[in-house]
Image (cartoon, rainbow, N blue to C red; front, side, top):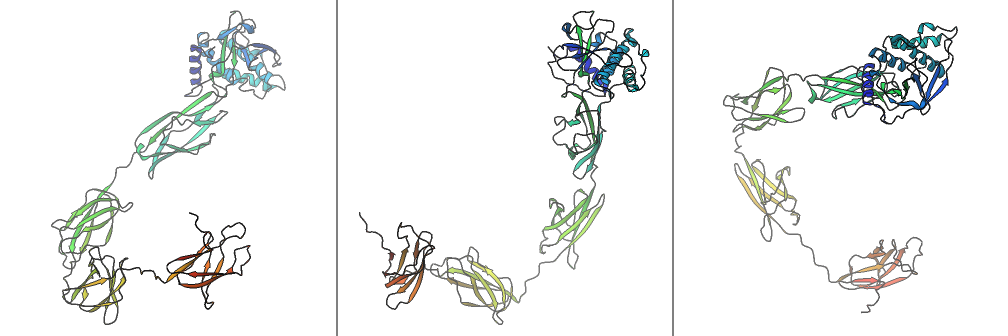
Length: 580
């Protein structure tokens, strides 16, 4: 059977909304018709009312119609909509009474006492609103048990004054202000009587808005952070915060009986998954300030003469990220003015100098201020006339045999009179290199680095630098050649093995001795493969003698005779004869 009929659901949701601002309520389906049992209640204020309980859940059940018979547990037919039975003030007061009573609140009484008081309060409320039931004025405090009477009167006041349970989630809307490159704001979340605190619904929160400071407890100070793209907007986040409480409209179920003479009932149902309260928040984002602008004016003139120069090109760059924002080109009056630039720090760098003037290497810092034009004067030096007492040296580097041009040869240029090196030059792909201007006089060139495939020349190449001339000198290099092997030499290759299993042994050291005069001419040390090969040795007779044995092996005293043959490698021990 469905848990809540259509009309009942309408009533319950409406009632829940009356409890605390915006309220949403959800509960699981599948609540079965209860089986009611009768319990003799505790004595309160001089009376012991009969009380009831749902045997399937243990929750209390309350009679509504005092003028009808005690309910038959088998006669409960399903939920009904109280709105169709009672006037709004009656059922609203009844609901608030029940939500303030047992099992939601017990006033410090025993469960039996609290339920008995709640049942009496229900009958007293129907008496006051419908004319049947019990008169609350007939009850008074028992000496020493004033707490029972106070609890009872509190329930009546909740009904009379239409006082909802104090549950909810409170938070203030946020003014999001600019903080660097983000918008930020804070709010404090206060939770009232929610057993499980509150949660933030990630499905409501936009992905690009971040919330920090969340613990789920009352008093959380939440910090919202959003990108500047939200500037000037207002964003409403409905039902961003949700919380759980045992007291909501969905915790009350109104049951009818098939027998119209039997009591109708209301039964509490505690559902820990019920979302009883939801609360939203509004984010109001500060607008971005209107950007402020200024200008840069460039004045370009010549050194000393202060003549205004046309055709200078400057790049204008933001200091914070080196981004070029524009270029300035000086006109016929030697000036240039930038377009509108946001206030901030910039720098200028000359990209092209005026004709016949040297390019400036200076980086010029400038700060643009609001509604002002910052004027910068930059001076250029004229390109100097060539010194008639200076000249240059040009080197042409070639292969000695085939005359091909050679790159990557490095030469030092030295003054002859005092051997002072005045510069270095390196030949390019065309085999040439040219010095800067040098005072006329006597110099020599010395090769410091030859091309990789050629021999280094050790010769000093004298040259005379003449005024306003280029002295050309051609220098050749011979290729690096590999000498042919000496046909009168050979090698010895040694294999070191275990005597028993034939395993190859590393770290054995042998001396190589000439057989004719016992002179040691070399050493061999076996590698991880048990091998060692000698350098080239003149042909003739030799012997090998072990100087150091491998670890855990005895040193051998045997002399191993061997004859070195021309252009051959003799193996010891000799390889086994071929069988093919």
